[in-house]
Length: 185
Image 1 (spheres, rainbow, N blue to C red):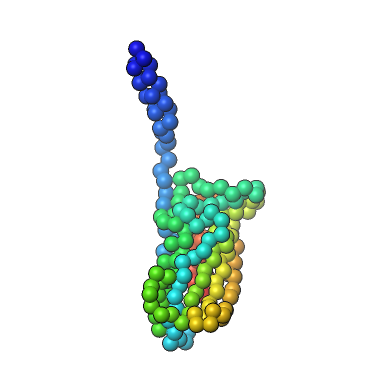
Image 2: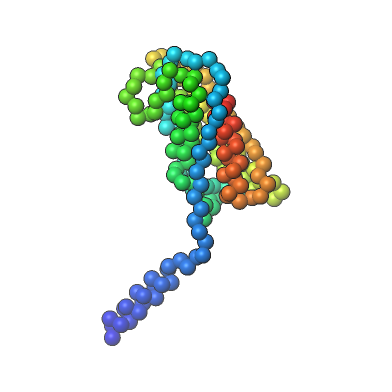
């Protein structure tokens, strides 16, 4: 009798905890390509460090802010961590630009002349009472590898309106902002 009651309780707990949601998880990728930029070619090797992220946005969740509260979309996420998606796009963009003799990743043992540090400060969908927009802020530093001195430092900030407040439209507008960032980088 005790076994039957115990099994009934266990079955009731497991069936009650199982989600019976009909929602499908959507996964988004950034994959931003920038057309070739005509700029002088440097004879230097640049190493792109893995992006440092402020706050929780570096993972695979897509975050939004509403009424000063930060939350994430339940049924939408990035296909990988936001850090790795942006890192891949920056690395690919610099390689395709032909601005440097060579572009290497953070895990390379190659000797580089310049180090590119990336800091993702904001990557949020902001939803206010009357507006919806993407807030994307990325800081970069070009550092001379030999001296350790900063060659150039800049913060790129984008605020782009989103016509319909949802994750899908946020991703579309984020790609536009990221494309603009990569062409300016």
